[in-house]
Length: 171
Image (cartoon, rainbow, N blue to C red):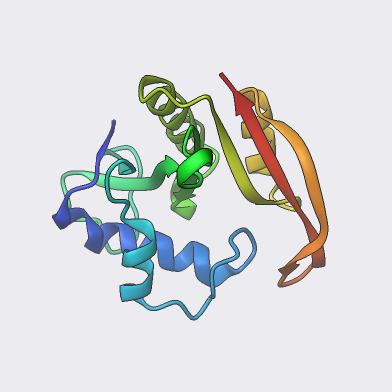
């Protein structure tokens, strides 16, 4: 089930965000990002939206007693203000235990449907690490195209400098 985030979810979302950001292998966020910084970046204000993928299927460490597990989260909204506000963007984070189970795909489909319903002309992902082959495969399967790659723009912790793709899905 994908639903809008509520205030009481943050305590279960922050460990996912922290894990993904500290791995430093998919996002351009500072791995030393604090919880306060993450909260300010991840929780979208209208017209944007932050959601969680919740349910009982995935047990996330530290979340064993909750009747509703949070396996992933996404944020979406306009990619730019003003003349660029007709194009959406979105970002996704999935707990390690939820990867490979369709959580990321479900979150991406939700973002696409949301953007279409909001009247956006398409969705642009600004910085998809070329080494994040699982995400690139999901996005391509859902119709996104790589419209450009900035060579060696992402410093991967083990692979060194890899490209950052700009990906787009036009509605």
